[in-house]
Image 1 (cartoon, one colour):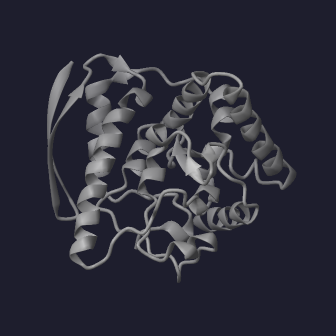
Image 2: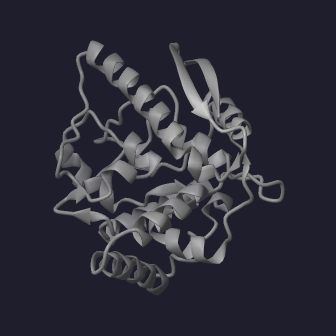
Image 3: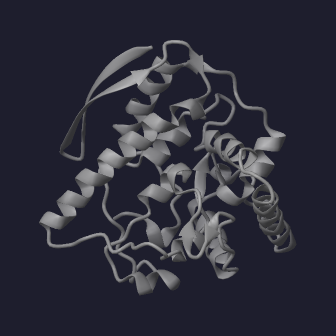
Length: 253
């Protein structure tokens, strides 16, 4: 195990930290605690910036409107979600699996499953259209219970970045005009997605959360890579301005 000393500037905000990272090959999902830590630090700094401007994040507990959006996650997170579910006791595990199965069936019935299988290959307009269609179906995330996330500590990176400063009431019917996303210094979610890049697929690698189990079942987890290499790649992508598949109403801007 090595300790990486990180000094990185994002949108004028400087981050300095020490990160324990394995020199040995590890699966990308093993890096998720590190990515979560960076996400938390970025959001804390971003929220402070917004407070200094007289605004605050308006997201509250039991406000699950955004949990009916199409939620894009990194491919490595699909294997993490599968493991989280596998570790659940019965009958909860079967209940969650049934929720996933019902959503997949609905997507297939509505002709959306094929469009969402390799969404990185789709145009921005196609993703905007299918995101709107997805939201119109009002399918709650399989982990949503009492309008709150039941796997909050293990929730995907992009879910952590879904914060708004506009009235939460607008989230029930979000538009670019009514939703005011929290501007953040960098999207760790997009940087994580780039860790899954492969030479023959030079587009952003992601999958909707609700297709995570389907993806993980049909695609073996990629070979491990040195943790130091993964961290370096993550930081390199984090320092850039990568594209992000966030649904249109939730994009920072």
